[in-house]
Length: 357
Image (cartoon, rainbow, N blue to C red; front, side, top):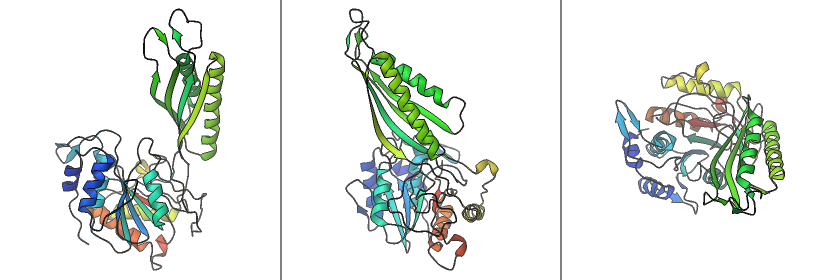
């Protein structure tokens, strides 16, 4: 199997902003490319699905070279993943998919739709930075919080309810819920409220993300968040609206054989997943679209252990090093997974290969 050098694709992709432009670029260079209404691009037929997401957190820029490294916003997450996947040739039994809606408030809509449409047995998410093995997934819930008041003049109506102060108190209460905890976090962003310095805002709002390692802890923390904002709203006599924007369940799915297989693959490309590199809980999980029976040793409710992939068994994602050699080895492992002659890998699992930083 001949693998192209992905650096050419990376240099061409890096300056392209937006899923649409990147999807058009990929489709023009992917033989037999197909697209859906969301903007996903894919090619190939089979039960092994390789995924790389097209969107980035930050607006892309042309990369800057420093020695053997390339630096740019979004170059590792996930421009390089797209480049690595695009550099692979057509493979029997393998689908290469490029998805939208992974970052921000996309809620994995592209990956969910493609997994639902293609029903793969193995999913590989090509994304990330460093080599390692992941055996745990963070769960997360993303919310929009809105607090409403009557508004008014900053002096004449100074005794009226003030939604900004209610929001501030609610955020302080929420922050206290995770103080000192290693298994959960809360993040607030996108704060809004008011248009003039001498006017009481009618509304204050923010985006909130709640994360936890265990599903039960996530549910309990979410209840605490709702109660904290409800108490703040009552105390300040303002209205409250909470809108769920996305959910990603927690999962812990590794089996010893799967971890050993991932570490063996790392070793074959000159990397090692030592104690410091066995990442845990870096990203949230994608719920399976079609739960089905599997031969897993310890299934965990139909949830995979990494953010972009979906398998019914709930097995872990295995991070592998980047580059064309690692990509080739990863494909060989996943393709052999579908053969009965390889019992060590004969269980439904999700693997993930990080891209070059």
